[in-house]
Each structure stands twice: as structure tokens, then as C-alpha cells.
Amino acid sequence: MDLLTRRIGTDTRYLLLGFPLAIVAFCLMAIGFSLGVGTVAIWVGVPILGASLMLARGFADLERRMLPEVLGHPVARPRYRPTPRGAGMFRRLANPLTSGQSWMDLLYGIVNLPVAIVTFCLTVTWWAGAITGLTYPIYGWILEGIPDNTGLAELLGFGDGALIGVVMTTAIGVLFAVTLPAVIRGAALVQAGLSRAMLTGAAELHEHIDDRVRIS
Image 1: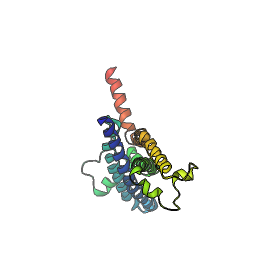
Image 2 (image 1 turned 180 degrees about the vertical axis):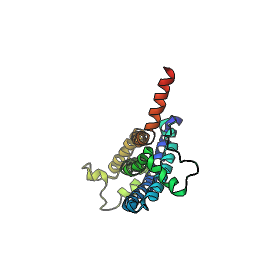
Image 3 (image 1 turned 30 degrees about the vertical axis):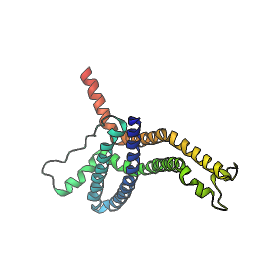
Image 4 (image 1 turned 45 degrees about the vertical axis):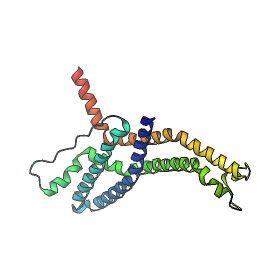
């Protein structure tokens, strides 16, 4: 039971934190990329794109730090092209443009938002349904007793009695509570799966190849 509770708490925290991070990352990545591409012809866009890619790497590193807790095992960090020693400021900002993983990080910051919206909405909906339904017997009698109040049971055609309304809403809350672990876990794995594929895929492939070489 403790393991299940920790699992639900970890997945819920991951999904709830991931949504605002996805919004911030999307805004910064979209603005930086658009501004950089629009001014690259006059070279101003090069350092802007480089700064955007470095920012994307920071968000990617943050996501990679959260993945092990959700997946249950460590994840690899991709290899980024190092900045040459003694490089100037312009060269340092332009260096990320030569790293394929940096562009993948930026792409992740953009495509991750729709997935984060869906998983966040599922998390909030299931938690709200479970909490509201399970606590409905405490306050539902008051709501059901309000004149001309149309409850859920009445809307579904089960009658307009207070007892029917309380029992019906509570049963729905139980259904949400029973399915909560599976829904939250599934949403977390979908979110983490996208992150793992885009932010660690190349690194894990290299590690797999290195392991096969050492075994051979």
C-alpha cells in the first residue's frame, strides 16, 4: 500500500509540475526560434538561436533529472558537442547549432506542450472526480436539498431524491478513485516516454552499442 501511495504521489507530482514547465519552455523555444530564424540573415539570429538551444538544453536536463523517479531506473544524458577551449562569446553561443541533440531539445520543448496539456487535464480530472465523489456524503445532502437544484442523478434519469443523488455521486467518486492509479500511471508513462525518446534516445543507443562491443 505504501508503495502504491508513493507511486501515485510521484506520478502526480511529475505530471503537475510538467505542465507549467512545458508552457514556459514552449513560449521561450517558440519565441527564440522564430526571432533567431527571422534575423539569421544579418547574423544577429545566430547567437539568438544559440542562446535558445542552450536554454532548451537546460529544460531538457531538468526533465532528465525527473525521469528516473518515474521510470524507476537511471537515464543517460546525450553527448553534446563541446565548446572549443578559448572560444569567444560568439563562438560559444553558436556552438550549440552544430549539435543535433540541441535541436532535438528545442523540438521537444515545442512538441511536448500538447502532450503535457492532455496528461495534466487527465490528472486534475481524476483527482477532482475522486475527491469530490468520495467526500460528497459529507456535503451532498445540503446540495441535494436545495430547491430546484438539478443533481447528477436527476440529469441521468435516476430520480430526484437526495439519497439517490448522494449514492450516485459517491459511486462515481469510487470509480474515479479505483481507476486513479492506472490512469495517473499511464499518463506519467506517456509523458516520460516522449521525454525519454527525444532527450535520451541517442545516448541510450550509444550505451547499448558500447555494451555490445565490450561483450564481444
